Length: 204
Image 1 (cartoon, rainbow, N blue to C red):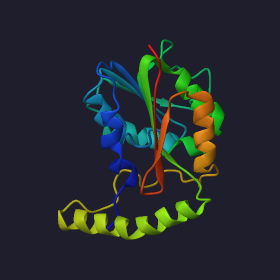
Image 2 (cartoon, rainbow, N blue to C red):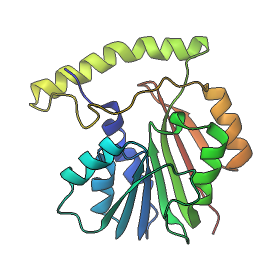
Image 3 (cartoon, helix red, strand yellow):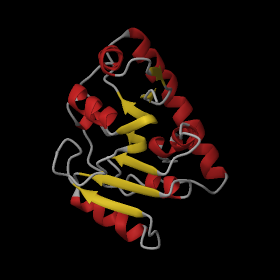
């Protein structure tokens, strides 16, 4: 009955790719599930994670992919060998809450080339009545999706086994305020399964 909420949103992230994307960066890549999907559409992909175990597992799962580069380190570290001219798309899946919100958001925006896209699936701290109502609705919905996947032979927890876990400390209101300040024109939408979607296009 287990299934990966993070992987559930990969389709949305892939739909945010610019029409012409040559270089992509996935921040907090974990075992590389999204990186491997990006590599089917983008010429070169960098995956970065602070966990040596996750990077090791990502390499093991992706030996046949020559267009992928795995980087062990913190995206906020200026010495990390990221592309100096930036990326056409920067993604982050349930990793932004592991970092200080505003510095991480600003850093990821900085790495987006003009005309490029920042796309985030994030995790927020529940604080309002509507947060808790959505959370209550999500529980039976999660079970229903799990039952459907099991019936279709696609059950089992996917890709995120052993990943570092941290509870979010920022509320959806705080995330929206930071996005309004740092990413003018960004769209932030609440998702059903305790997540939010953020997309920002850097002006050309």
